[in-house]
Length: 203
Image 1: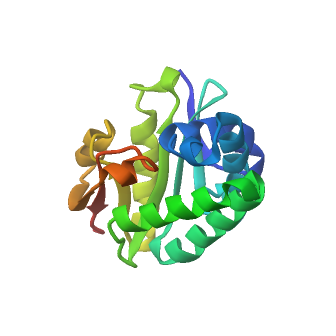
Image 2: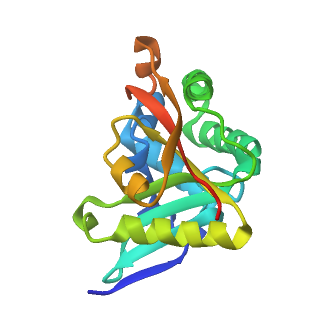
C-alpha cells in the first residue's frame, strides 16, 4: 500500500476541510450548518495567517487520496493566528454569525490551558474514517516531531479529555501538563467534558 506525506498547499482546501471538520465539529454549533462550516474552514485553510492555514500543514495521502492532515506552527504565533482565524471565519460566515463566533472564542480562551512560547503547537491532527488504524496519524505526528526537533522546540497540543487519540499522543511521549473541565454553559458552545494541554519536551 502506498502512503505519501507531503507539504500542504492552499489548493488542498476542498479535501482538507472535511478532515479538519472531523476534528472540530463544534464549529457547526456556531455557524449553524455543515455547509457553512466547511466553507469557513476552506477559507481558513487557504489563508496564510490562521490556525488552520495550509502554510503550516502536512497532508497524508493513501493510494492517491487525502487520508489525513496535520497543522503545526510555532506557539509564539498563537495569538496573531487566532485573531486571523476569527477574522476569516467572520468574513466567510457572514455578520449573522458574528455574535456566536465571539462567544465561542471567549469560551475557548477560558477552557484551553495556556501554551508556552517555545513549542511547536499542533492545532489539527485528523485522519479520515476509512484510513484509521493504518498508521496515518502516527506518521503525521512523527513528521511534526522531527520538524520540532530540527527547530529545537518541544511540541504541544490541546485535546478533549475523552478524545480517543490521547493514547496515540501518550505513545509518542506526550504527557498531560494541564487540564480544565467545562461547565454546562460552556458545553453548549464546545461540547466536551474538558480540555487537556499535552506536551512533549524538546530533546
